[in-house]
Amino acid sequence: MSQTSIRPEADDSEPAGSSSTISLENEALVWSLASTEAYQPAPIDINVGRSQQIELPALRWSNYESLPASIKLTNTGDTVILSARWNGATPSLTGGALDGRYLFSQLHFHWGRTALDGSEHTVDGYRLPLEMHVIHFAERFADQDEALAVPGGVLCLVYFFNLKSSPNRFLAPVVNGLGSTVLPESYTKLEPFPLIDLFHSFTDEYFLYWGCTRNGSQVSPMLWMLSRTQEPLDFHQLKQFNRLLDRRMRPHYHLQPSDTGPSKGRHLFHVNPRTPMAVGTLMIEPPAKFAHARWIVDRQPVDWSSPDACRQYVAMVREHLAKKQADQIADDVIKCSEN
Image (cartoon, rainbow, N blue to C red; front, side, top):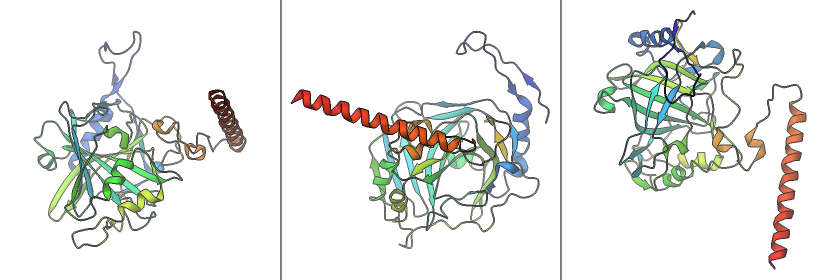
């Protein structure tokens, strides 16, 4: 698709000599689909080979590092919701294809009976262990309920979780709180922490589409953005979600739709891809916050598509073990000198 681009006026925050372009045509394309595709079923199957690559302005994340005044975790009987309150500005998103500012409303989780059927969306036809939805609503509306009636009023950020050998320390506050919310309609207060600890910001490498959810006769059209980068958790953390009870006092599992395949002609956008040829639907590399994770195999910094990937991995492990051994020797020397 050809693009018509313009150069914005100089921004004082940008270094001298830098420039950027904003594709008005791609933004218009996304919003031209809202009146029709926003009422088609969600979730869908995500497949990078079926997506359409487009360039959009960078997303701008504001106040997500701010510490909330309070955080509440609630078992609704349908899911577990995390809500928060700030004394200052509420975390928000602008940029991309968004029409104005979108304020954080709440986040919640979707899980299944096993690690093979947890996510609502499928990826290349398969489900992942856990899926998190971070809900925002457009600032021009009074609240999320009012915004849900209008296409583009609500934005849902989607994060997938995959199983790792060690626990996700950033998810630990939520997992620990689940023990106090086993019963439906129960809740607990968590020690405040920046919400961005639970997920990661992104400006590129994400999927975008329109779709709606249905709750009885209520239809909720939304804009969906799905990160290609996964968050980790271990099996013990995942099983804590399985302890939660629904309104019938039974272990709660989300009933998955029988068919998540998008209808013919429906648009799935791959936004701001780093390379023109993307083979895998999801990214292998973990978020930057796990750069110093304990388990070197979980970091997976090796390009496994490279012919010498195994050699790189072995060299990396040897270097890691040598450094660990040297650090241990240095610690022993210090202890001996202190004694």
